[in-house]
Image (cartoon, rainbow, N blue to C red; front, top):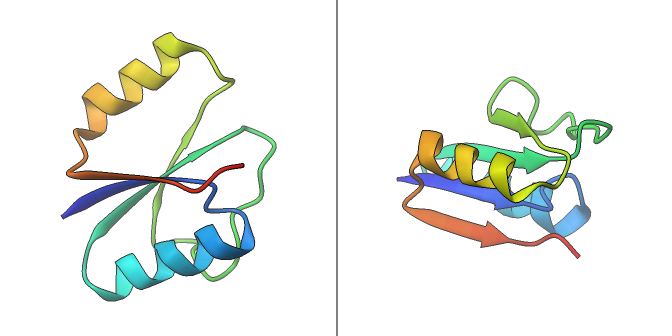
Length: 74
């Protein structure tokens, strides 16, 4: 399973992403370029930095082709 997670640098998102990894899923994070990935996830995820344009989001979705999107950003 391929999952794309928004908000994974926050408390809930980092734990949800870690649980997805524990299930053997491939985890992609959608982040702002200034976001710091929690140590819990470093080296275990694929990070996609975007500045917030629809073009960037569309490109990431096309490249990743996730089975699931977990939108946890607020």
